[in-house]
Every structure is written in structure tokens, then in C-alpha cells.
Image (cartoon, rainbow, N blue to C red):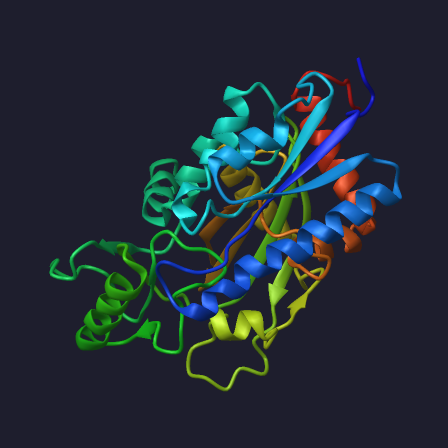
Length: 334
């Protein structure tokens, strides 16, 4: 068996415009290119032969692996969308599986499940994992059962897209107005969940079989002058709120966060690496979001958690590659 793949093909999504949402949402897709370049440079620096390939369609995926040997090639999947449609991101790993290639990151089933935030919340509750009370609005005319105040966001977006200064609503009229905005601009159902005004944590995990909590960070809202502390799209992409790594936790809280994060990772079927968002209110922790294939930018939360845990950027990526290569059955990694 090969100790390392003979070749790595890094596939990254290319988006020139948005079909739904706000024009500014394109920022999140443009970051993918910068991350792809950083990943390639880092893996090359420790000896991995790696090629970077832009992906705009399923045909590009087929062309990218044409001539490559599935027995010796690993695909590093950094596709966060396909063309201009983020809900088709699972088509990339699905096609890779059809072609017999091992790839880094989440399965098509895991990506589809986690993209539907309403479905994931139902799944979490079914397995006894706490999450904020919620309601999904498909038409805006549904009887309102969601508790107020609430946070309104698209049911199937990432990177805080669709979360603006009006996202936290305190009355029925504001809720209906924000739901209408999501339905009209983002062309998808709106998720309305009880707003939990408390500490927010980001938990990075990795591994398969035996899963490890890489690190826990906490969003620092100390300079928040708004009524509601929310890391919305504007604040996220302007780095308005920093994250504290490691989060200041007492032993009991750290243990509880680890247990909840590990249970979520395994219940939802994550693999290789993922990040979870949690909030605490009145001593109770709630899972807000599950992020398979989270961003791997050098300044991002996952890389920061790895750095605090003792992994520099190249060796963090090396470990992720090894998780995938071991999972493929091509290598016995300790």
C-alpha cells in the first residue's frame, strides 16, 4: 500500500455571479480561490504533488480526473457550490464516487443533509441533541409557532448569507417581513429559530472512527453595540468580531462541549473534518449549525484551532489528507 497518494487533485468551485441572494454574497465564493491557492502551496511545501483544477460543472469534474489512477490519486474537494447553485454542491463528491475516486471531505448525503438546516435540526432533536426551537416557512403564510425573539435566515445557505441587521425579530410583523425577504431574495424557505442570547462557541473536530475535538473557540461580542450579538454577514466578512482560541472554559463546560460536539459529529455522519456552532443560554448548550467541509483559509477558525493545538498550516492539511487516505483503505495510518 502507498504511504501517501502519488497525486492530489484539488478541485475548487468557481462562481462569477449569483442567481439568488445579494450581490455581496459572492465574497464567500471568491474566498474559495484564495484558500485553494494556500492549500496547494502548503501541501507542496511538505512534498505532496498537487494540481489545482477549477470546477464550474459536473463535466469539469469528469475532465479533472480523466487519466488519473483512482488507486493512487486523492481528490481534495474544496467545491462549495456547483456553477451558481449552492444546493448542488453534493454533485461533486457524488460524481467522484461514481468514478471510483477517494476524496477529502463530506459525503454527498452528509452535504445534502447539512445544507438543509431545518432537516438537520429535526435530526438533532430526534437523537436527543439540543437545538434552538424553530420553524421553517415555505410560503410566509404559515401559522407562527416560533418563539420570539427569533433569528431569521435562509434554510440552505452558509457563511451567514441572508443574515443582516434585521435578522433578529421581536414581533410578528418583523418576522413576517424578514421571512418575505428570504423567500423573495434567496428563493428558498426561511428558517426561524429562537434567538439564544448567550455565549457562542465554534468547535472544530476531525477524524474517522475515533474522532478528536481539535479545539474550541468563542466569538468575542464584547465590542458589540447592537441590541443582539449576532455575527451577521457584514460583521463576519469585515472581521468585526474576533474569536478567542482556546475559549475560556471551566472543566465541566469544556467536557460538556466536547461530548455534545462528538455526539453531533457522529450522529450527523461527518467525516475527515467539520466545525459546529453552539450557543449557551441559562447553562444549557444548543447546537446551532453543522458545517461539513468548513473553510480552510489560513486565518479561519479551523486553521486557528489547529494552530493552537500544535499543528501549523501544512501539517494540519497533511493530517486531513491522511484521514481521507486511511479511510480509503489505501493506507494504514496510526
